[in-house]
Length: 285
Ligand code: NAD
Image (cartoon, rainbow, N blue to C red):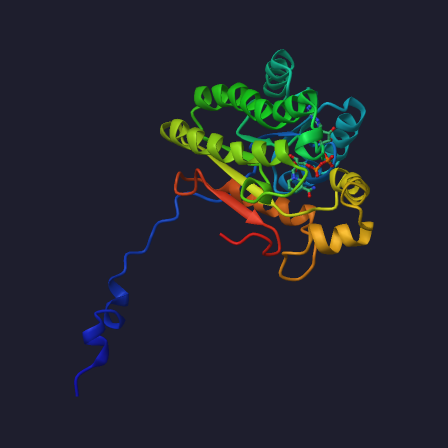
């Protein structure tokens, strides 16, 4: 009887499959990560998780006291940490802050461009000032921090990982969020360009796209949206924020931090220019 595996050309050849030498290890140990907006919410948890995996952390935030407190907490986890006060929309402050981080910690290998705010309003009521503020924090901030950090990554020659904090709103729209949705979509375009430009230097760029996470940024929106939409706060949570999820659950800061750890530690250009959606199935790509 003929051996079925001979036809498939598969089963009998297992011994011929070359063993891949693992010459890289997915790790952030001893790398330096600069995380914007790391004094609160998602950025703070990313700082903690990267630190617990051996990375040294620059806590970059506009809130000086909270940044210092977060950096002190990170140090207590047994790695080096420094607080860098910067408004990510201020070119000189970003450049100076990145220089300080490199001086204090020796390099910058990982950038998590995460600082962000939310302003909700229907388009006809959106002030130009608020529109520009949103674009400045999310898009200009990503550009300025990327430019300042990537120079050091290129010069050091050790590659690097740039992670932008996108959102399901990098893929989907919601009412009342015109500049937020526009800005978060823009980050995907930016990441794709940085992936191409950074590739010869082994600098990768990716976007994390979380669903709703209960941080101060979201807690503030619940009553605001209830008022704008004329519904209860419970309905905002159930029928606006979590309506399209597979299980009615919020994404957590830890869910997002684990994604950041994975992207930060991934060593090759195999994973670059991508966006990773972590949203309880709200958006499936
Ligand atoms: P958060 O309000 O808890 O933290 C934001 C941090 O950014 C704060 O520490 C704040 O001081 C800092 N910050 C604000 N403006 C700044 C500026 N100009 N320069 C430097 N720092 C500044 O918010 P969060 O929910 O942790 O949001 C972090 C990121 O995650 C944002 O980009 C947000 O758009 C994104 N995101 C949040 C959610 C969510 O549901 N919470 C979902 C998807 C994406």
